[in-house]
Image (tube, rainbow, N blue to C red; front, side, top):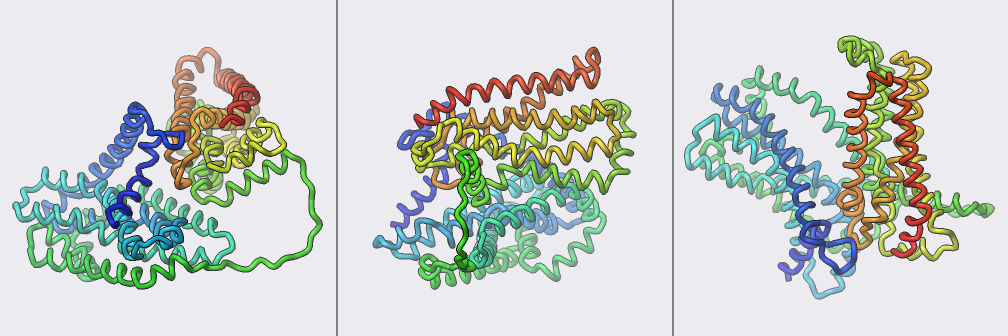
Length: 530
């Protein structure tokens, strides 16, 4: 029974790779190969990033005789990445799973259900930890000559450390579920926490080189602090050097918290799975019923769908958040930005082109229409059965993209035009081009989603992040920006800055018009037949 549950969890996790967009059909071999190559590319990028980071740490720490500190620091990074990547999965799979009542109605022991889900979460934590630990171990083998016993203990740590990450993820997932259950809009707390994790990640990423230098310069003091305050990490570092007693202490520090977490969850899982935690009660108030037009009602439906899903919000409109943050940063760091551009004469001569390129690159991260059709899921028949034309439904999805993308782009364009003191023509083009590019991205993403719909998804993340239309739309948007940059190298000199930007605006507007015309006719017909 436990094996069947675990197999089901693994199949659900891998469904995005092995299942096609039609229910009951497997993805073609070419499709699986392409998806696998994409995942390998993303994994290779992260492995290379942590390989370079480990390379900056290993040599100076090993030369100072602080091998244990190297493993303690890389282990900390592995745990942090694993917890951040798994905490929301722990929340949804353990505390807010939608199939709890179905499974509990079967003759399945609750401990089996909990164990299968924690085993799946362990696999996820293991992958996140491996991204950090594999390159770290490879760098250490290049810089040092560990004993065979040290290598054996390092491999054991490779499998034990994700257990510690799993325990922390379960605890934090329980806290997130508890907080969100007390709120009227659960998606809001999830979105805020996700943005907080993301902001912390970017802050640490941009400060990483500075922190690494401080660690190297103050390695003795940092090592002494870890030795006194973080006992498990210190024992892990000593175990990686071949200390058998330290390995036993580390294994105990991993096993005890996990046993406590599992025991607590096992004792309360039935209550967790069946309790309906109510949010703040909504008191009924008599109001006059308002009648809206069809287009307005469809747009309201898309807005409610967007605000109800933190996954959709975070992955669909991240570019808009970054644009608003960039506008605020440009105002605060105005002098620094002007000085930075002044230090590069080539860039300062093409400030309007630079501003347009940066804004369009950030806009390419907005993928609101790319999964919008797929998110209809098995209830797509509701949209198809409404007394509206298919084009009206598609147009509402386009309007949602523009409503959430155009205002932040306009604010950022206006701020950069004022801060960089652009010419009137350059300022106008800096405002117009991002708007046209946003419409092009919206139409392109919607067209790709109609061609590659994914209606049999199990979780929203599969439609939003793992569908072929979302991935292709992201690369297509990036490719559009890249093509415009490459063409600019050859055409900006004869056409001039404003002339080239005007040509770009005209070409993108023509492409957006052609895509909208296709959506109005062929796209609407295809939507009705899905």
